[in-house]
Image (cartoon, rainbow, N blue to C red; front, side, top):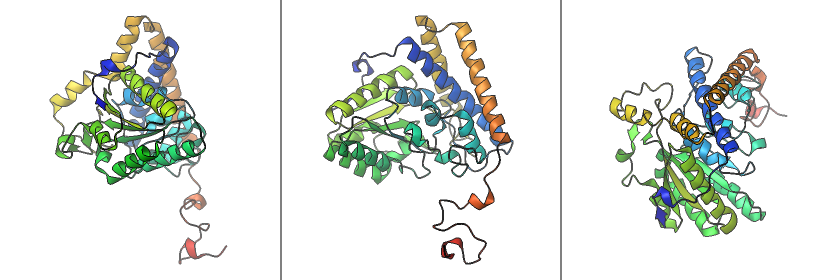
Length: 345
């Protein structure tokens, strides 16, 4: 069955240490992306750059509820996922810069981060492309009789891709330990969700597959944490896949090339008043978990990390020209005009 009442979520609550860790992770993601935008405008980052500013609660809350060995796949808006999983900010920034020290050797760029060591199996430029990969990871867990949980993170625009229905059917049929996590920021590029989906309650897609689902406040890191914690329990203990819809909002346009002129100013202001960093900070202050001194120390630490990441990326060597076609062609790069693929070994 489906359930939208967040008061019915399990009472589990992270301890003070974990909440402080979640807070620092959210601050790091916000500042990292703000600085990435600055570096993009300077011409230091090429290609596309999709920022998740405003979505930090959904990203951090979901990943914090999982174990470090639970595999995750994501969309092309995935800087936050990599950082929340513990990827080195220096290597992530270097990847955005297209440098050889990047997390993927500078060959993937912003949309294709991957950190296999931390079980983060990538961001993907194809809308919905990460969903069946998470199901495959879930199948591998089940086949090996493991107790990990695979989570597919995708946006509202991907819910109208046929691959979601196919993947959910397979996961439900085979009882795979998979969480389908849709981060609904209400816009697929510049198209409002009510212009693209007949039913804007996206979590209801799970009903066709007899799968439990919940709709959560994606601007509340604690609501997301509790929801994913329960979904992970279902997958881990009962081999029950489920779906979570976290409703949030991105404060920037679809990408850095989007002037963001189609969304109403009043709408943006309404969502910005619920900034997930500000609201979570108030919770921590109210509980005595955070003090002004601690908050300042966190911001200073994050600023240092981001500055060091930019310096590292800026000073790192570019990808050697000979490596640009690595992983593209079956054979090594060659100047042969016929193309590298026909050059004999």
